[in-house]
Image 1 (cartoon, one colour):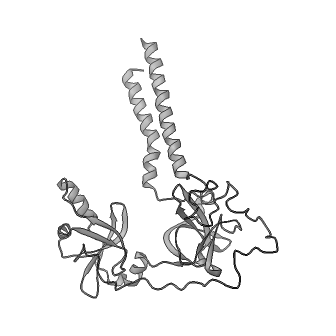
Image 2 (cartoon, rainbow, N blue to C red):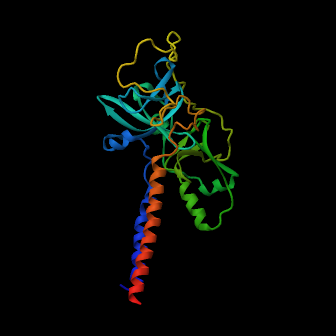
Image 3 (cartoon, rainbow, N blue to C red):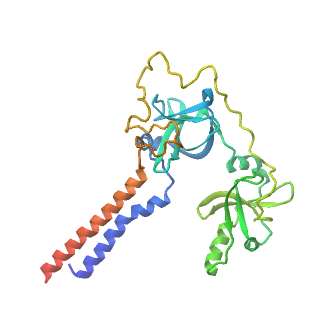
Length: 312
């Protein structure tokens, strides 16, 4: 084997080992949840936000569908992102994922204890018949504004991000940004303003910009999210009061005393507790890949050294 062949082989092996790292950045986010990993093929992708709406004014997040092992609680009205759902004996459950500052907390909740939050999909369902695709204006005029506001939907009063317009380094970059700002469809509000739906802009997905007034953050709210009717707390049954009867079944141990559980009664106050997991599956996988690549490089270097020594 010649030195050149050995080097080519080394490059191919390193690139092959690095491919999983690139793939991690492109795939749809999957929750680092053990139940989801065991039942991935049975889960359906959703990725929408919901308001917690449990009985008694709060919602229990469970370790897995149908389990009686609680991992944390949330007050009714709190927003939860449900990435996937699972059918457990005819009842649909959703997996929720929350970043706690050092890793991911995951758990499952019955979808019947959630209320769908108004979002861009809901807006399209209500106003899709008013959308059109032809825009007669010049999109380059967007660059004349000092900034561009990316709204959750027209008239919501809430925006996702603000893009500060700056001179482009070259024409290629300008063309790229202009292609991102090309709306998929247009909506005209009651004041005659045209809005454009943008599917992607610097990793921000599914937002709206006001094509006629892109930098105005003070556009009046004309289509707010409807008020969510939540279940009220049952004041006659305090959930923190201990019961005189033992809990049947596989009851969870006191939260915070078992390192093997993702217990989280208050994740904002206890994000750094030692009793909670300090990492996530994605980080562990990434570290493993990096270690494997380094080990492969060292082994290949040793092989090259041995072959060249024999050749000499």
